[in-house]
Image (cartoon, rainbow, N blue to C red; front, side, top):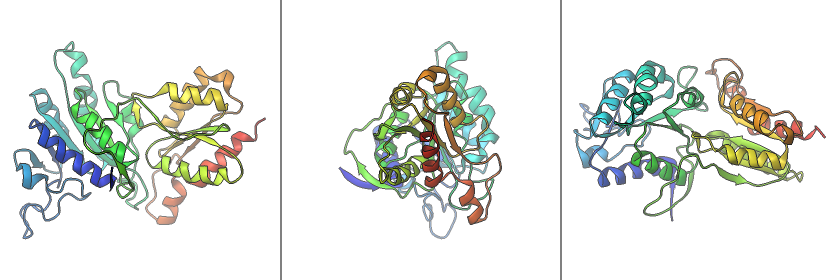
Length: 336
């Protein structure tokens, strides 16, 4: 197995899949980067470093720098998918997905249903999201819950390099629109990545840790924070099941419910405000389907119902932390 970070796993997967399938195109703002500058077409190579080398290998017909218009990017991707291409559209910041909600919610998500299954929309939308880099209220949000609520869209959140490769490969080879969320603070996370063919099916959560005292459900950066909390809890003899959802649509309900039925306690860590959040959804799921197994009220570890601050100290206070996850586990264990 190779050792690489998530950025490299995404970049190498895009390269390999574009070599394999000539119908895959990529488009977005500055994904080539540097066009028209003294440094040449790839002087920048994409601001997140996930698309270097693509333009040089595949050219301007398949690697397309777009205007600053999210509605145009997603609209073009939707049309290209209907016409037989497999577009990969990058939204530089997930926060601006609202500009293209009609194209996603009323078009991409509904093509297969509205046309009676006679068409398909194999488009992947890469959304860079999350707090932790002081990019302030308009560039730090986690909007996966909003898109999870839209029938017809698949929603994916890799947290390891292996899953970045496996989930992206699965997305690129499927026939449905996939919202592929990449947390900006996780790009440098390193790990083993399987060589050759590697696909990770959607709807299969990953059990990161196993323990009998409580169930912690998380996605994205919160999985890493959950591991740090688990280390602290283990020092006091407390073991948790830590579940990495991988995908929120489809959702691996079985993994969540089986764990809660064994532990009797649920903690959901979710990097978004609490109202109508992923945490609220999973807490409701467990209350509805595993109520008699619960030994304590479900605990939600989320940000406050407020915009994300710019100031470093305030942002740190806003984001759910390993300490907050640990505290929530201890609160749940206080119920006997």
